[in-house]
Amino acid sequence: MIEKIATWERGKNQKLKPPIVPGLPWLGNALGLTNDFVGFLVKSYQEFGSIFRVNVPNQSFTIIAGSEANNFMSQVGDNYLTLDEIWKSYSQEYGTDVFISRMEGAAHRHLRQVLNRGYSREAILAHLPLLVKTTEQMTDQWQIGQRIKVIDIIRQLVVRQLGLALANYESDDYFHDLRHFFCVNINVAFKGWSEKALRRRDYLKAKARVMELGRKLIANHRAIPPIDRERNFIDDLLESTDENGQPFSEVALIPQVLSPFLGGMETTANICTFMLFALLNNPDVLDRVTAEIDAVLAEQRLSASALREMKSLHGTAMETLRMYPSSPVLPRSARESFEFAGYSVERGEQVMVATSVCHFLPQFFPNPYTFDIDRYHEPRNEHQQPGVYAPFGLGAHVCLAKRMTEIQIMTLMATLLSRVKLEIDPPTYKLKTIYNPNLCPKNFWVRLVERRQ
Ligand code: HEM
Image 1: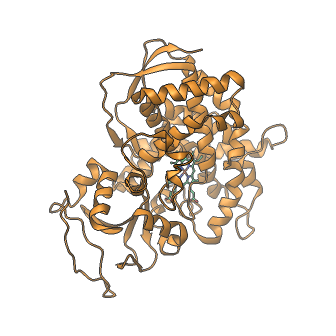
Image 2: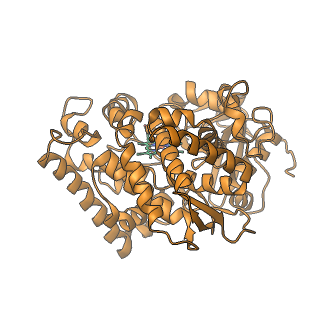
Image 3: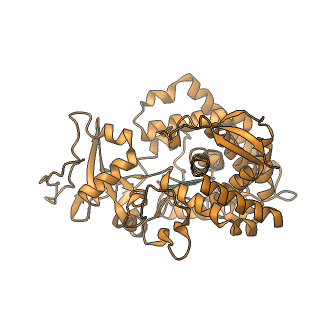
């Protein structure tokens, strides 16, 4: 239990500063945040309200949380909060400032517009057979009785699917380089790792390979225009200009063309893994979802309309995104001083918008720690209350691929569940989670029990 404290500290402008959540000397709140990051933020919100401060060694963060913070973020938050500093070291690794998560204003809106079509629901729907086939290829390789470490295998599949579907490229040979490059960069940008990690030989080798992949993607698309093949977002980028009408340089194009290979690695893959865990751990839900998939696929092949009929599978995906958010907070810094809920936040402060706190508040999601796939349908529609459900972020930087991702998750899971029967191995496994770098299940293995087709 956190003890409530009154703080009377005032900021430079004499306005009250948000309360500090009590912690240990030097360590501050590091233990609470490491043990259960979201749980700690939920408890602190319940104790202190929608704004408070937490400390970890050498760093301090202002947290804003609850529906008031989420509504602030979706309405005006981008006027006061910026991502520029947060993603600086990451984008510098590409040698360019043209990095979507870091951009703002007209340049950002313009780039989103260029990428929109290629990241849309429709773009991935054109590749449903490919998503099905690649998932089947994965399950076909498994032997009866084989133990499978889910996150590893799903991560490779997700990256493979996104590369093929969005960028027309089979990326298996680059998988380990992509992962190494991504993890080191995220850990340096967000987890306080020393920048020395960016100078290590293994990292530099991976980085060189990732840049090689970027250049290859650009060259391939330039060499073979989209006449006898599906047009994709790289073609759109190559034919477009920046917001001032100037062509994007090769260096500026590289982070954009690599985005599908990195964007799903720690998000879509983690969600599919948690979803499998939640299903195997809730046999009633698994039976319902499997029966639904079987019934729909008995009548038609997997298609957009077939997916629309899989309401239980959809509820399962939505509930997984609520309970296991891969991006539980939006990291920002204050672009200028502002007031929130009567407290002052000063220019340059590190702020986290704890978008996922509402996911665990019983006033919005009754019995929030129960996996309940019926929250998202009439008459409950719990996610439709304003500012309570935000697994894909809020505001100007909301996930560009969110509609597409829903299709990929449902297709992958429907195909997997229609093909194989799995069980958790060992059956006594209790879910443990780690941030690696995003939230994922730790040591979660399954065993192939039988083939269903
Ligand atoms: C379950 C899967 C996913 C989740 C939960 C997710 C979540 C998010 C979140 C929370 C943000 C906002 C970050 C912020 O504002 O600080 C974001 C942004 C973004 N996501 Fe996703 N994402 C997912 C999948 C993907 C995939 C597969 C791709 C690429 C193919 C992708 C591409 C992007 C891009 C490009 C942005 C930056 C948008 C901008 O800055 O304007 N995401 N995502």
